[in-house]
Amino acid sequence: MSEILPPTAPSSGGTGRSDKTILGRSVPQMTSDSESDIDNVRRNQSLAELTGFSHEPDTPTVVIKVGTSTIMRESSPASDSVVTASSVAEAAGMSLDADEGELAISTLALLTDTILTLKRGGFGVVLVTSGAVGMGCREMGITQRPDSLAAKQALAAVGQLKLMQAYADLFRLGNQPVAQVLLSRTDFTQKHQYFNARNTLMELLKLGVIPIVNENDTVATEELRFGDNDSLSAFVAGLVSAKWLFLLTDVDQLYTDNPRNNPDAEPIAVVKNIEELDVGFGQSGKGGTQWGTGGMITKIVAARLATAAGVTVCVSHGRHPHRILDFVMNRGEMCGTVFIARSRKAAIRKGRKRWIAQGLVPRGKIWIDDGAVRAIRMKKSLFPVGVRKVEGSFESNNSITVLDLQDREVACGISNFSRDECEMILGKHSDEVNEILGYHADEELIHRGNLVVFKMEDC
Image (tube, rainbow, N blue to C red):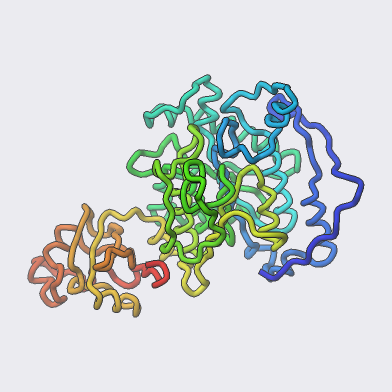
C-alpha cells in the first residue's frame, strides 16, 4: 500500500461528545481524533487513490476479530497495564459496581468508532465477534461457563441476541447498517455453501454493510466446529480476500513464553516464517478469561491459515482498537505482533484451491518420498508410486494431508482413493493399480487440479 500522508494536528477545540443511552446506560458519544485524521487525509487525496484500489469491488478489506476477553469485563492480570474506568475509580476510592462478565461498553464504543472511521476512509470491514456464550451466561445468571455442548449451544442462542443488540445500538449512532452472519464449519466443507457464503459477504461489503460474524454454535457439533473464533476469522479473511486480519486479545503482543508466568518472556514484533516460530505457553496457551475458548496457540494457527491466503495478520491488545488505524495507515510505531503474508505469487488465491486448503477438513494423512515431493512442486499430479505410508480413515473424494518423510506438511488435496485402497497400491506404478484393485481406476492418487502444494517457506 502506498504511504499515506500524515494527518494535520487536530484542532485545539478538543473532542466533542454527547451522551447516548445504550442498553440502559449512559455512554459518551465521541467524535474521535481518528475521525478528524480521516477527514484531513480526504482533503489531500482519497484513500482509494492512495492505495490504488477502486471503491468496488476491489476495496481493501479489514477483518477484525474481537475476543471474549476484550468485550467482557473480568479481573485479569492481563489488564493491569490498561487504564480503565474501573481502575481510575478504584484509585480514587470509589466503586463502580461493574459485575464480572458484563459487556465492556467503553471498549466496544472505541471499537465501533474505529470501524466507522475505517469505513469512512474507504475500507471494507468485517467484524468477527466472540461472546455469545458469555452473554448467555450473564443473561441467565450463570457464573461459570458450562462444559456440555448442549448447554453452551443453548446459552449461545440466548447470548447471540443480546450481543447483536449491543452492536446494533452502537453502530446505529453512526448511521451504519450491520448484518448478522452465522457460519459453521460445514459451510466451508461443501463447495456450493463455501461460495454462497463468500458471495453473501462480498455483496454485503458492496452495499456498505458491516457483516458481524460469529460461529453458528446452536447447530455445530463437536466433530465439525471451529471451536474458537480465531480460526473462524482466518477462514473469513481468506473468504473475502482481506488485506489485513486483526486478532484483538488480552495481551499486547506475542511473547516467547507466557508473560504471566515467565517474567523473562520477550515480545515478538514480526514473524516472517511462522514455521520457524519458537514459543512456549504452558497450559496449552489458554487465554486469560473463563468466558472464552481461545489463546495464543489458536492465534498462531489462525495466522498460519490467513498468511497462506495472502493476508497480513496482527495480534494486538483489544483495549486499544484505535491502533488498527495506525497500522493500516502506516502511522506511528508498529504495535502488536505482525505475521507477514505470503507474497502474491505464493499465496493461495484461486477460489477452488483456497476451498480445498481451508474449507475441507482433512480425514487422513499420507507420507510421500522426496521424488514425489519434487514432482508435485513442479505442478505434477501425485501418483501411488511415491506414497510410503497412509494414516487415518477416509474415503475417495475426501481431503487428506500430504507430508514428506520428515513429517512436514507439503500439500493437501482430494484423494481419488479410500484409505484401504491407498494401502493396497502405495508404492505401486500406475500400470499395476487396475490389476491390484480389480477395476479401472484413476492413475493419480491426487490429480494436480485437486492438489494444493505449500511453498518451501511454509514447510
